[in-house]
Image (cartoon, rainbow, N blue to C red):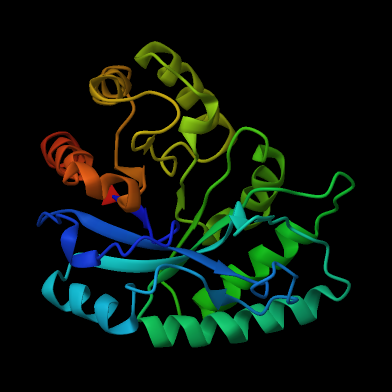
Length: 274
């Protein structure tokens, strides 16, 4: 299972989130951004902008208490304050990769991270293949240097194309696809099944995780779990799920984290939490 945490700046705590044994639970710290505090691009030099409560000590502590927990950094996200973020085509691709590798190496070692999640959500109208090349080479380098063991990507309906290109060229280094199904604003299990099927055709079907936004867009409440059951009935093996986010779920006592983990333990041969 995978869960985003820390994006809103609310003082959310890792230890407050329920974690069941038997689940590979990935906390995705949100976000590490290659921009300064005003949103100006920093050419691959990433800095942490997640909640201040998500300290290196907090990450190390929850991992020591729960050996099934891993921690990741999500790259970019939608915005930094009021500044909307976007992928930009670096003038020197190899310099961007070098800067990203060095800055993320420091973050990974400081925060005891196990992986990265790629969540660039806007792209130039006249883009080229710089995103696939830069990000694909970055993931490959981090894995080849044994700095990370897991890498995920987080496309949604308007960003499918650059992520399909990335996955097509570097799919061997990408472990899971955290497709943001809630952005499709699906309201019924039947429609969820339809879109899920289409996305598994674009990406490796075994990598695509169902996703849910707490008190947000798309399918909500019991219908999400009905959708999971329908997916299994139609032959999809549900290896895990992605939840956005712990920040929103705190007020409800992490009901969806509890219920999703129970579903995964009861119905899946392997389980991951986003």
